[in-house]
Picture 1 (spheres, rainbow, N blue to C red):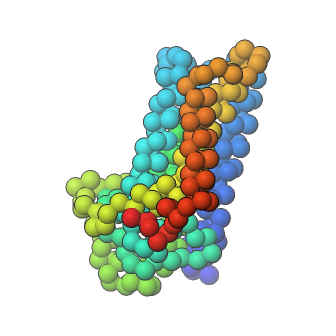
Picture 2 (cartoon, helix red, strand yellow):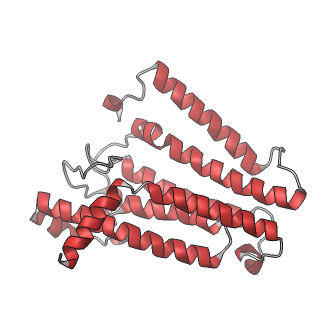
Picture 3 (cartoon, rainbow, N blue to C red):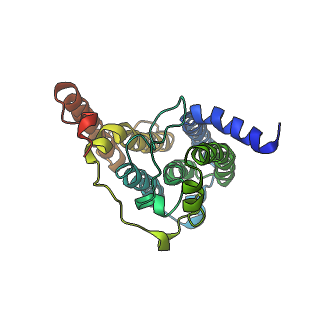
Length: 255
């Protein structure tokens, strides 16, 4: 099998399981961080940078939130039946060319990368983050290859001509075009609620691990991370209640 065919085959297979990698990253990161806290003599990135208190964790959160912002800005303006959460096969009724898609061809994957990089950095382990970056690159490179092969087969010159001046992963800000659609805020509330809440839950878990090994007990105070956890747990409950009792967030009302 030719190499380009092998890349496409691998990408199609990985596309179906693209939500699996973050789970392994999270479990590995939390396990490593727990071990480092248990060993007590580990000096992490924050120590070398001279950051104290919550400063380092807040920097990590800002990185993750920047990825979340990219995801929200991307999904809020996409054409119908594009950039979905489908895992069985590629779907595209058109080519997104404005908004985030005018800056780069795969904005959702850049958003995912930054979201999980922020979590990876919580481990404070340089080698873990090098491993994460390499793993993400190898994993999503195949997926991006398969997606672009699908789009070229479906749209031909329209896609290849558009992609000539749009980089795959690093934004080219001079290309920016205002989104052609209104922002689908109901869609974002419906689809991204779990991801938003999960992000703050993860940061709270890392905080609890560090607090426990430092103080010998869980943190039950109204600390920053506990407050964020409570707020977004309530947020999830409210959104789920709205979805269950009303049609306010139905797919037909995405904008």
